[in-house]
Image (tube, rainbow, N blue to C red):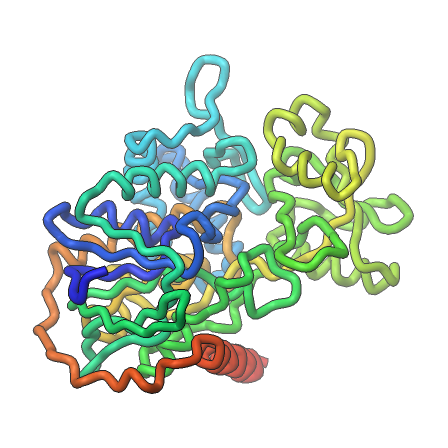
Length: 429
């Protein structure tokens, strides 16, 4: 690791990797991640990635996204995402992302809850892994991109509301200042703050807490999406997500008596509410999801990893319903950014789940997250290349004595984020 880079990107999920790949190869780029490079939530995304199916689909896609977001979406951001989707998909195909094909070799599309028609590309039930691994493989071949694993950002370095770099901490709790005129926060969601979450536990909103400390503007921290169907388990750790696509393909939800109790294709927040109500009524910790209507062929070909996980928990989805429970899944709020992914601090960008550009509104439409991450990661790269370069500001000397205990530092950030989520939630009630 060097002392100075042309750009520092925090996070090796889809947003961080794609941003790095869209920057010129003459730029020296540092990518850091808390764990191994493939331990990002992007790798866990099962369902797929949306794309515009021709001009006649535009109004439907726009309306589906707005409706899911309770019409609180930023319309310009939604338009930008939809209009960029075809170009993004073409790019992913160039990176050798292997999307499912039909018998004629054409791209195959599926439909998920709250979509008016099939417009989702997928790779089995591990689309996020397929996309993000392809991006990671390419990033590893680039001589200008340095990827440092097991490095934790513990602070920003800034002066006069201009970013100057970050403080990173290695596994030995050694704090190191690294300088750059451009810093991109692509450090994911807030799942680690919750008991039941589909996220990796180490992804816990550190970037939000650090941004708050530096008075960077945040937005809608209380807009937190619950995924209605995660596999119920007595084990500790993250919850395994049973994709929206499973219900899109025809799976049904039952109460404790084996009776359907709601429409399975409602937007996630409404469906989660119905499931919570049914669990309370039944006095249970889960409801049942029946995949048998899909047929064995679809289960084994389209959802092999979900099948394997169910078997591991002692359930055979070909023969019986599986227990599911809502869990924290996705974060629609975050560090406020404009359409170029710029924050309120000069030289500081945010993209992916840690940012809030208004695309999702109050509730994300299924399979918009990977697309949104890629579109706005590229916009961040575009702004760094073509936008106004921030004036160089030399940082004051950094007092490294305050960076001695990683857990203490991160715990302080997490507490600040939870308090702010609660404050925003109370102000909206």
